Image 1 (tube, rainbow, N blue to C red):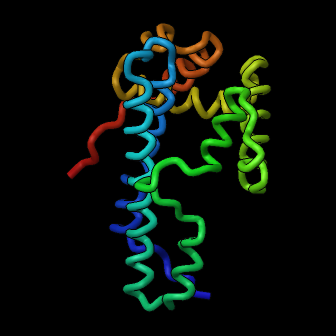
Image 2 (cartoon, helix red, strand yellow; image 1 turned 180 degrees about the vertical axis):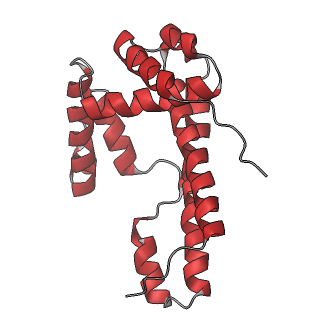
Length: 189
């Protein structure tokens, strides 16, 4: 097993790209809020795909380094999990539509129900719809959202705006997160 550390310039590039991806993810969450009704479709898709593309850049940067240092093509393909790749250019697929049908309480056609992937995604959508009827109490999800919103509010110096678009519970947590964060300063030259 190779125990060579990641080169510092690569490490820093990855940290920068992951930070950008996290900001895109926070914006996806922000555009789901009720005050964004006029732009949510466009902006959630833009920011979700921006985040996915940025994380894809991370993977390709690491893969290029691994390739450069002699990793076998088979190992690289395995690590990249290429079998999981789905192209967005093809648009939503049948299993995506089954998932949405489950979320909005629609039944699937007999033909659609014949495919195991469609049944699984439809049932997942139904479970998520049921969970949406209960209070938002998953501590891990609430904490993640609060961290993302608190970080963005601190970076934009707009902590008080959190009350205008978040639930009181998430806004309170996000303010706590923001209160302990310092505004990042440029690194000394």
